[in-house]
Length: 203
Image (tube, rainbow, N blue to C red; front, side, top):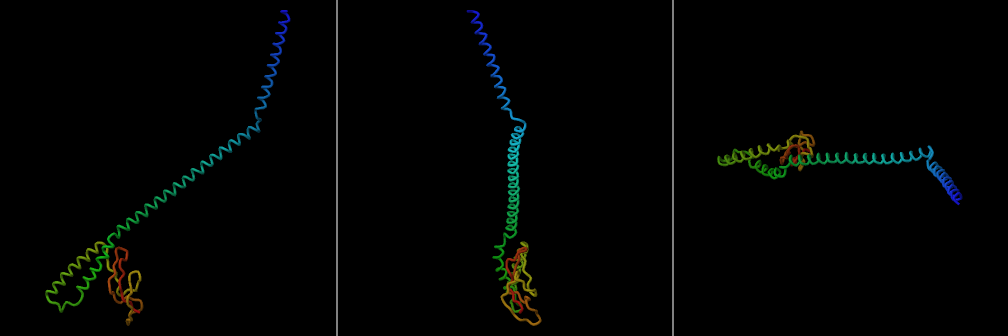
């Protein structure tokens, strides 16, 4: 009995060893089959590289796009600041324009008051006119401090920028298109015409 049992156990051990060896071979075969050859490895690596390159290109394009936006935004800001500075400088340059325009008719009235011959005036009237002249001269000097100057028009070619022709007249010896009389003075504030001169022009 003991010999039979021993023999059975030996047979079982032999079967286990055979089974174990067969399993090992199967596993080895599976591992070998799972490993791709060099061509497949290169293909997979190229696919990975291509995807990485696409991501890199997309990132570089995005960076370039953002840089362009930043440059445009910076340029817009510079242009905006320059426009604002120009507007402020222009506003400061001509900030007194409206007030000066209101003063010009007063200057006109002073000039009418002091024009004419003084020969027939009494001493009181002459003194009065002298006082008016002093006020007029002082007012003109104040305007000159703000770069307000009259437009020189008489005996000049008519220029629609500086002159407003309200009369035409033929004058012997004067060619056509010349200013022959200034009926109301024009004025400039710095380099800007704030009131064109009313003039008579030769035909």
